[in-house]
Length: 437
Image (tube, rainbow, N blue to C red; front, side, top):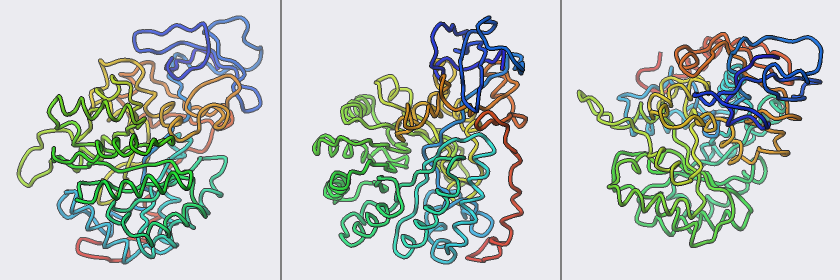
């Protein structure tokens, strides 16, 4: 393909120059489903043969979504959030999980989400799996089956999710570890908040990860309360235990509400501890600082610019889809990048933010380089897994949903028709409370 524009930050090739948007005009040769070469546009060394003229349109690698909740997805029709609050979401999900989350129900909704993500151009994702009580034995086997079925289309990772207080329950930790070892991806995690036993519980989480060779993925401080500083406790625990694995901290909303000196202190610890941070801009803007009859005063997101400036690896991701935590969404990372740019004001702050949905999440998921065959980047020898658009710069890309994008897997266009929400109508018939149709 000729005259393609690609973000230079996502291209592994020499001799390229970027424009003011950080985009470089290239010719990309594809042979046998792989990228044979990436050269400056018009280079005579390009191999002869049929060529597709991209006419300056932006080309991206297939993208990487490092924080989603496939098991919660699409329960809104039968269990909406009653007031749009975080507690409304938590209580609604708990009730729906107890009433309806059979293996068949979870499988149908998870597979629907995967088909959406694939059609939009996602190459890999990490989903959190609610891991409490009977659900441990239901959702984890379903996850393993879907991972096998989707191999070669989407690389799927999974991390357990439960409240930090359950880390104090030896039996619960044992059951979750067994599920991860049987069906998971050497990942352990939970939701942290300021319980009195936080440090003791974190010691158990870190010891469990060290003893089993797990990386960690944590939900952190998803609140507008400045007193919520579990991120600092996590960093202290990582340093205390000399943890050598990868740590991804999601949300970290209250970090943005700290006094400047406190924020700087916590960020310095996060950097020292080797923690990466993922912001979930769409979900957090939906939930945070919501009060009846009052306009929200902040956007709900973490201090992403400050983290990045300090050298902390940062990324953005989809989070929830059509469930009580986020009523919207479709696992579309181009939408996430577009809305993240607006919510977090990523424009006017560098030209490498495409890393946040590609190279960075691939690295934290261990999918970069040879192991992942170049996921999240465009590189000679890597798979010709591409998203082709007609947009010629970022303003054109973000002005429209890019519904006419083409997605290539192994150099071939996939059917990018999205599944119809009507396919899940039979699940909405499982009434679980007020508001269900």
